[in-house]
Amino acid sequence: MTLTNPVVAASGTFGYGIEFEEIVSLEQLGAFCTKGISLYPMAGHPAPRLVQTAAGMLNAIGLQNVGVEDFIAHKLPLMKRYPKCKVFVNVFGSTVEEYLAVIHQLNQAEGISAYELNVSCPNVHAGGMAFGADAGSLEYLVGRAKEASRRPLIVKLSPNVTSIGQMAQICEKVGADALSVANTFRAMSIDVLTRKPRLSNVTGGLSGPAIKPIALRMVYETARATRLPILGMGGIVTAEDAVEFLLAGAAAIQVGTASYADPRATERLAIDLQSWCKSHAVERVSSLTGAMKVPPE
Image: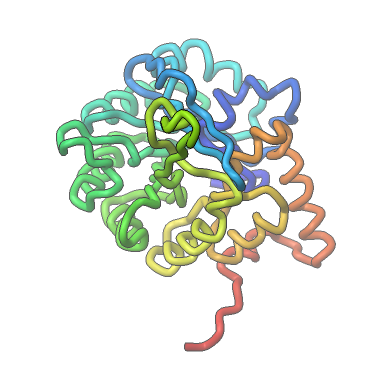
């Protein structure tokens, strides 16, 4: 798959894409990833669902979405206006069967370039443990999803694991085509005056610049463990941030939390990254992937 540029709007931060068309030139983006799509509509968690942190954000949206049928009928067709911007559909479920049911319906739709499998969801058949935190569950889910998919399959790994490299190798073994590294970090915040959690769900996902050094390390470890293309993410705000992820081994980058502070962050980053490459005599941005100079061991 060839992208116009390596900038991708991350899942859950860019709606269904079309909501941004009046403020972002969608043709300037390599791709965007939809918010998670489930078999049936979901209302998500009650408010409060967002909390600002010192260098980022906590969210516990609860995967609110319109469901796969409504998405195919009313959301997806609108993106045909922007053929240069590829559409990745984020897929999730609470059982393997739900994941597969969503993929089977999406297979019949036009205008989708790839699926991004969200494996950070609780597996109800495994006592609520996230698919991506258990090697056996991850292997089974990704293998079945790959069999069902008629499009490239990107697996969005959870960072809440002991070895992200091991999880990447499992995905590669059962046929994943690419990896997104990584999802949000599980975290929480407490109001000391009320002594209550600031999120209705108590815990949520931490994102933004606070996680960038950890996410960068995870991309590097993943790149050393697998040959799969990596979409790196985690606190990317500037062109220099993006270049760091590319040098660590990412083939493309995803921008998420930055869009909350600046709705045009993705377009600005695409333009700034092109300018950075020109000013540093980089003819092809792909030449940056994995080009970090590592001291000899």
